[in-house]
Every structure is written in C-alpha cells, then in structure tokens.
Amino acid sequence: MKRNSKTNQPAGWSITRRRLASALLALHVVAIFSAPWSFPPPASALSNVVAGVFRPYLIASFLDHGYRFFAPNPGPSHLIRYEIDMPDGAVVQGRFPDRNQHWPRLLYHRHFMLSETVYGIHNEILDEVPEGLPPDRAEQFQRMQTFYRQRAELAQRGIARALLNETGGQRIRLYLQIHEIPFPEEVQGGLPLNAPGLYQDIRMLGEYEGDDG
Image (cartoon, rainbow, N blue to C red):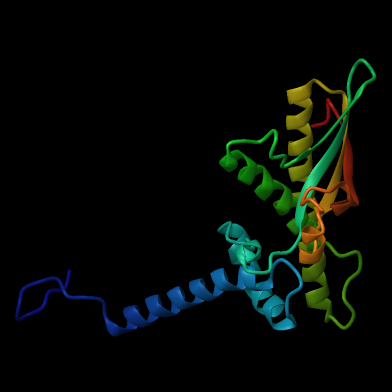
C-alpha cells in the first residue's frame, strides 16, 4: 500500500480512481432516476430512451421500480382479481390487495407491489415490433419481449399456485384489474373511493390447473 511520504499514512485514491468512481456513481444515480421517470405511463420519449439504456442494469439489480404513486397526482392502481373453481363446484372470487383481508398495512403493501409488478411487466409487452427499427435493434426488441412474457408467466404461475394451495381449489383464472381514482367533484358528491364502478378488468392473465408446474 502506498503511503504519504510526509505523514507515513496510507495515501488516498489517485485522481484516475476518483474520477472513475465518480463516473460510476453518476451513472448509478441516473439509472435510479430513470426508472420512476419513465414508469408508469404516461412518460416522455426521452425518459423511455434513457431508461432503455439502463434497463438491463435496472432489472439485474431489481431497481426497475416506479414510485410515481407517491407524487401529488397519483395514477390508478392495479389489482389482480381471481376466480377459483373448488372441488364441490363452488366458485370463490376475490382480488388482491384487499384491505379487509391483507393487514397490517405492510402485508397490504406487499400484495400491492406484487399486483403492480405484474401490471408493469405486461405494460412492457407489445404485440408488434415498432416500425423503423434496424434489424439488430428489432432482434434485441424481440428478445426483450420474450423475456417479459416469460417473466409474466412465471409470476402468474406463482400467484396461481399460492392461491390454489391456500384455498384447496382445482382451477383458477387470473385477471388484471384497474382501480380508477374518482374526480374530486365525484368524491364531494358522495362517491366512495371503493365504488364498484371504479374497478374494471383490463385483461385476462391466464387460467391454471391445480397440478400445473
């Protein structure tokens, strides 16, 4: 270890090392900023481009989160609704997160993050390759789409397996649901935040059997 010739103490980093460390820290900060900047939609084209550059790093380090729901103008929340066929022929319905079932608040938050994660994955899935992409970018785009579909299926199978094991059901259908936020005028007029009309299915996620892998 190099030492300062005057104080006999270990010398600090060289200028090159400090510049490299500063550059890496700056890139890390930009990467963290790009996730909530670009997600959830609506987001600018610039934010999507910046986030696209850092997306492999964000996914690998589990930093691809959007915290915009903490902002002054939060968007709608997303839930997962399910229908479970029981052995006696009954159908059990529910959704999560459910504040009447998932408490204390931390348990509710964990279920909320799970449903929002599933929505976030599906929000990245596109049916067609954007026009004008060069062949190498189009191939990269298709690989990412395959990755997102596999990731979504893995998450959905895990949710289905957990719910079937918990209830003893035979078959389950999962739906992605949106919970819209009412306008202030509607709330002042007496519309409750959990009014049934504020919940809408936006897509079916899949149907799974009790013995699915």
